[in-house]
Image (cartoon, rainbow, N blue to C red; front, top):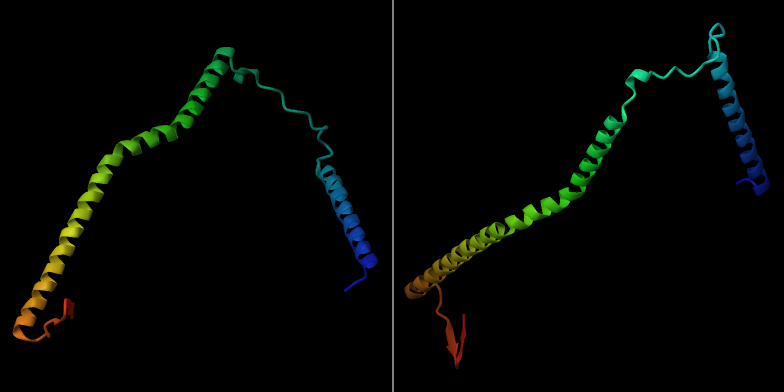
Length: 135
């Protein structure tokens, strides 16, 4: 690890190198210019493409209308989603009812199978000790 003084000197030298690079970049762009060409002058403005006040106003109104529509878009989407909500709730409730019916049927089938096996004697009957029944 270098002492603090030496590290500062390293940073100073790197800053000087960067300054040299940046100054040389500016000079190189001037050197790349064609010496036969006169100094660069801004291109003349094409006045034929200029818009009239009415065209600028029309564009401004159109831009404002688009911005207003973009602001209202989430509100409209929310309204549509809220309108769909009752239908979604009904489908969820119908699925829940179907699942409950299926569950109750499967439980009934299992219970019926256990009772049938108890009658046959495959499974031992529940033992009743006092008022408690143990399986």
